[in-house]
Image (tube, rainbow, N blue to C red):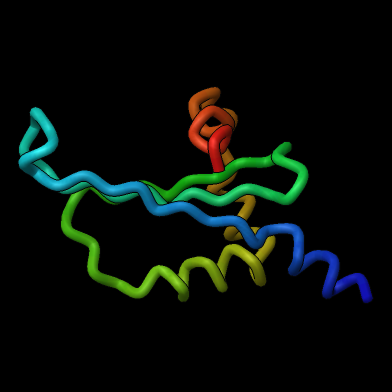
Length: 86
């Protein structure tokens, strides 16, 4: 089914985070990263404060909502590098 193949494309997620003691600016940092299986499309949503929401909801939104996913896609050259060892 076309729907299944669309859903299975974005199933890879990372959530690197940093605590205030790890950062010079003293702030929390959380990144929600995703990519497609072919490693050709990368996306990110960044949080610059303490984020306590369940990120599974965000992952579901990325998988199911093409417009939302498109709004988070980035051409930042650092994103593919973050995935190299994963």
